Amino acid sequence: MNTSAMTPRQARFVDEYLIDGNGTQAATRAGYGAAGARVAAHRLLTNVAISSAIEARQRADATRLSIERETVLAQLLEAVEMARTQMNPAGMVTGLREIGKLMGFYAPERVKTVLAPQAEQEMRRLEELSDAELVAMMKAMR
Image 1 (spheres, rainbow, N blue to C red):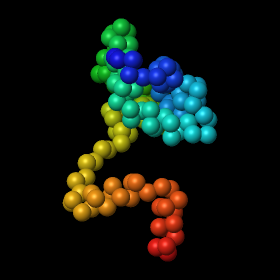
Image 2: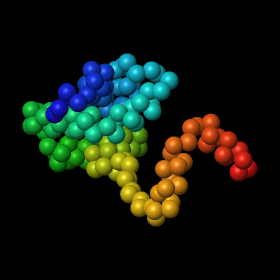
Image 3: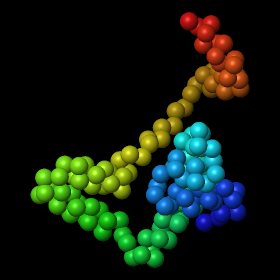
Image 4: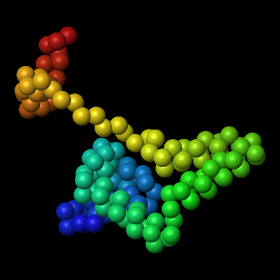
């Protein structure tokens, strides 16, 4: 894990994120503004150095605690079954949600789109426009 590629505040974000897995709360606790914490968390979690540091720390924790993914999954399934026998739908939903997270069902899909050269050139032109220019362009299209 190369923390030298991160600022101290980004390293603090990693520490805070590992507490509860909540990016918005971690960004706030790490000193990012509360108003933009959700956006900051998204930006931070897509940073390769930060996501690599989080993954490395999670692997190290799992190794240190002798916890394997399969064990966690099996125990979550047991908890869901227990909630089912107790007729506790909220418990079932919570357990299934955790299983879904563990299985990666909630991870965003990354899709690479290849544009034709003319479209790629137009995309670069749009990306270079300021917000004000984009708003003016949208208003002109109405």
